[in-house]
Length: 273
Image 1: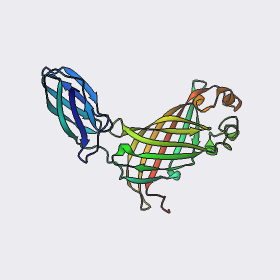
Image 2: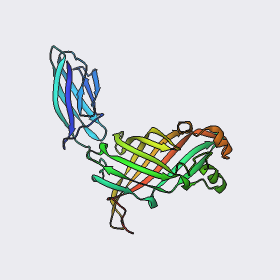
Image 3: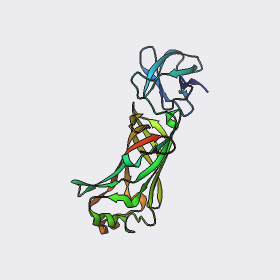
Image 4: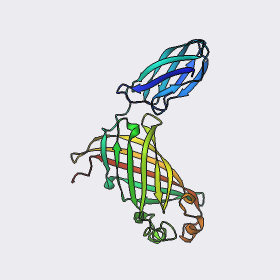
């Protein structure tokens, strides 16, 4: 099969998925573009014969340019291309288990009200862990939120939201999220794909994650900070508009914004403080 091929990796030997290969001819015109797959491999469509320029780019890495010699069959090979992180890139947390610190983690759900204001619900009872992998993109995580811990600032409304008409916390006491991997989107941003369990339903959900760094804490541990956001649609989780009206929060939009501010501590469990 013809085309320009190559394999893209880090200095440690890990593949760099979603890196982009761009090929230009001697006039600078782009003649091909291809995306690196999960294994680090990349291949273009057949190219015109001759000498071209191949440039590989990836978020958080410096670009690499190579000369590509294409045969009369339209094929060529770059071989192995190593990408190096750019200076000043964020330092990622060490691999291993990291435990969510409930005392320093919060989940906020925001819905529009009457199209002019917002209703916010806070969930303070969150727990779980991250398993940081190498490469970082293979990291996974699990979080669970106590549904009965919802707090909108109105005890009457909170009781309605906990009732069988809405969250039904007696039947579904936990809201869960299981993350299956990360895709880098910027210098300190990723998307974590996963599955959300809410109100007896399970749906795929992508979290937009911003990494805040890691460092020592005053209690002898090491902790990292992350902020994550996503948008949910009530109907995806069998929570319909009529039940929301009966719960006393009429005219609330069908889309709910979820924001998570999470601190994780290195290790299998939280240290005593």
